[in-house]
Structure formats: structure tokens, C-alpha cells
Length: 453
Ligand code: PFF
Ligand code: NA
Image (cartoon, rainbow, N blue to C red; front, side):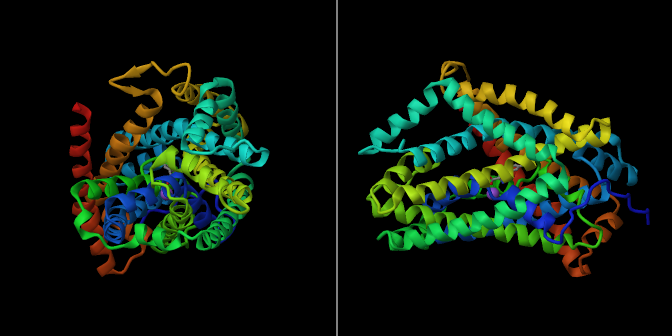
């Protein structure tokens, strides 16, 4: 057995990895995408399908990523290259690391714009900027916020700055320290929001929307959405989990931590649904997805309720923190690579990366105003970043890692990294060799269909 490499950085506390990885996983995907998908695709029946996807595809691949990171002790590029070489495989497998790193960077380039909306709405909630009588007023507020590139750019720039500031401070003093109060804080705020939702008068309707078991609504479309979302929601194939895994101490159990992160991510997604939909239904509104839900319906609903702006404030603080703890994980791979592999001091690496990120994200931000006409095949730059990452790069990266771990690397590597019992190991291997690739290929075929539309 090869001696393990010494890590350059390690999580300081027992909970360091779990908090950071949960911080990465829990984000806009949980709060604005999952609840809506659940209501749309069949409530409780969809939740079961989703859980199956998380278990059969997400969890096994997350274990691979953490294992690759810890074994290779480095950024995705270096870690994958080292582990491939250790098994006598081509160093070209490091391309998988390049794609993951790029994917994290590209996601962050549009994610900061959405996080910027959250910052901006927090400010509006505090300063009385969310007043309106109906949905059309809220649409007008949202559009006004987007229309001025200086306003919108201010918020996305602020988000970029805060993200790079944290990452620049390093693994322990930046990332670990910030997640260790933001994650508990977020969960407390979410629990408060659920308490509030219970008294809104719409709790029953919200619960019914989320959990009523509508087998008839299950569809292949729902299955594909669940499969695709499994990658995004668990931050897979974007360099985030792999890089965080490279800081995991040798004696931590990868299987146990993976399950904890996956369970926490799912619980927060369900909790978000319980916080949001009752408020929406109590005010006789329709559930929607994305910006419409969080930035139009929800503020309007809050407004009509006692202490509404207080709870709107709590909600947008929570949303901003969820976005921030995800954002830092998306860019850590790049900064770690510049630092470890190119010898650039971390602070410099962070600011260099930040400038590039700022340029690209500004282009994404302009999709909402000045660049409203800059489209390619009907999609804005912002939409392209989303589409390419979630529909192609994540599945492709996941497939590559599954094939690498399932067929090409020496068996001994994952035996020793994962430390599963032999029955568990066989099960994991079966998932990673056959079940995950099959799921991913289905998503791909579907994406190719969308491409020609
Ligand atoms: N998991 C995050 C969410 O659900 O919002 C998104 C994400 C974070 C994707 C980090 C990729 C990543 F590297
Ligand atoms: Na998530």
C-alpha cells in the first residue's frame, strides 16, 4: 500500500468538513428549486423518487469525490492526476479535474447574480423597498432592480467580494470559521420561519402540496429532473466536494460524512418547502419556481402578514447565507489549485480569481439589462452558464468519475479510502459501475434532446 500524502491543509474541528460540505450543498438549489419541483412532480411520490436518486447516484459519487480528494490530497486537477497515476492510468484523467474546476467557476458566475438579488432584497426589506399591492407591483420592483446595471452590479460585486474575502483567508480561518456560525444560524432561522408558517393559516395546504402522495403525477420528466438535481444539490462534479475532501483527516469516515451531508441537504430542502409554501398559500397565491417565487410572491405574501417585514428580513438573511456558503465552495478549487500547484500565495490567488470572476459574472449580470438582446440560440449568457453546467458538465464529470472509480483505479484505493464492509463495498461498486452511469446517460440523452429544440 502506498504511503498517504501529507495534506497541506486540514479541517481543524471534527465538524469542519461536515459543516463546510453541508454549507456547500445547502444553497439556492434547496430553497428555490427543490420545493417547487416537489409540488410540481407529485409531492410525496416525487420525494421518494428524489431520495432514490440521491441514494443511487448522488451518494456513491460524493463518496468517490471525497475519496479522490483525500487520496490525492490536492485540488481536483492534481488529486485526480495523482490517483490516476497511482493506478498506472494516464495523467490525462486530470482533464476531469479541469472540467470540474471550470464548472464550479461557471456556476459561481451566475450564482453571484442570484445571491446579489438576495442581498438586495434584504436591503429592501430593511428599508421599506418591498411595498406593493399585487403581483404586478412586485414584478415591477424586481424589474426595476434588474434594469439598472449599476444597482444590480453593485449587489453581485458585493457578493463576489465577500466570497473572495472568506476564501482568501484560508481553509480554517476563512471557510471553516464562517461556516461554523453561518450553518447553525441558517438552520435556526429556517426553523423560525417554519414556526411562523405554522401560524400563517396555510400550513395544511403547504404540507399537502409538498407531501400528498400523487403517484399519477410521477413522470419521466420528474425522474430526469430529480436525477439532474441530485448533482447540483449535492455540489457534485464542480470541484467543491473534492477539494473539501482533500482537507479531510485520514481517520474520518467518508461513508458516514457523506450520508450526513446528503441527509442534511435533503432535510433543509424539505424545511424550505415548509417555510415557503404555507405563506404562499395563506395568501391565495400560486406556487412558482425560481425568481417568481422568492422575489415576487413571497415578499408580497409577507407584506400582507403580521410582522411580515421582520420575517422577510430573516428569510433573506438566511437565503444570503445559504448562497454564500455555497459560493465559497465553488471557487475554493481554483484558489487551492493556484496556491498549491502554482505557488501563488492564497490571498493573491483569491484576488486574481476574484477579478476574473467579477468580469464573467458582470457579463451574466448584464443579461438582465444592457445585454438583454445578447442571446445565442435564444439563451442569454446567464442561461448558458446554467444550462452548460447543470445539463452537460456536471453529468459528464460525474460519469467520468464513476468510470474512473468503478473500472480503472486499483481496487485497493477505494477499499482503503471508504473503509466499507465487504457487502457495503460491493453495493457501492455496483452503484458506481452501473446504476449511476445509467442515470447519467439518461440525463444526457434528455439534454441532447433539449439542445435541438
Ligand atoms: N449545492 C448548491 C445548491 O444546491 O444550491 C449549488 C452548488 C454549490 C453547486 C457548489 C455546485 C457547487 F460546487
Ligand atoms: Na443543495
